[in-house]
Amino acid sequence: MDGAYGAPAILSGKYRARLAALSRADSVALDPHKWLYIPVEAGLVLVRDGEAMRAAFSLVPPYLRTDGSPTGVGGLPWFSEYGFQQTRGFRALKVWMALKHHGTGGYRRAIERDIALAEYLAGLIGKESDFELFEPQSLSIVCFRYAPKNLRGNREALDSLNRQLLERIQMGGKAFLSGTVMNDTFWLRACIVNPRASRKDMEALVEITRAAGSENA
Image (cartoon, rainbow, N blue to C red; front, side, top):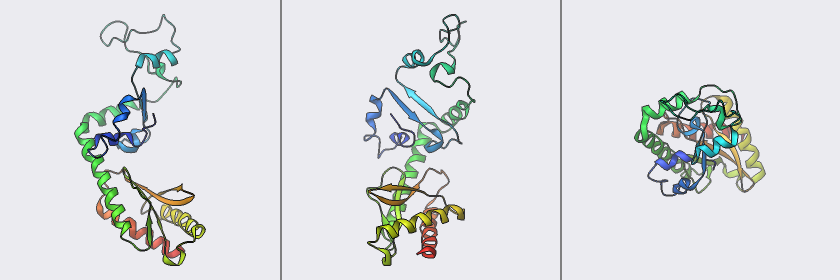
């Protein structure tokens, strides 16, 4: 199952029940550099049956295969036995250290804070007459677009405007947004995963977007 970005939300009170079905998956892919605040790059997969995964990928002959004992003479398995990548950098250390440092409680608080900031941003945008908000908003993602009154109802013009606006914001260096298409409509996409983000940043994002949009409208 692909939980690269969203799976950590299971730690939050709001999404714990909705994501409970993750426990039924045989494997869950995660990208800790997305919502576990790990420096790029870091990826991992949680598997229900480690031996099945080892049996699928291992190229180690029987005379070299370890027994998995951390204390005996056999030793631990080779990491290369759990995937098709035979040589790899040691990315696991930074993930392990972050998990040990923050713990479940630390990550829960940080993730719930990001979700609250996204809801705050959605609330700000919903009050503005020159913006449109995509609903429903979920996790720490807010999709919206700049929509001045003179272009309302003209989807092609609004799509073009917001594509230009996205480039202007990214090149401006004050904020970073991505873009996406839903229901054949182009939207700006804010994903809050920065532990230093604040409400002031959300307020600034609205103004940065408006300023960039008014230059292009």
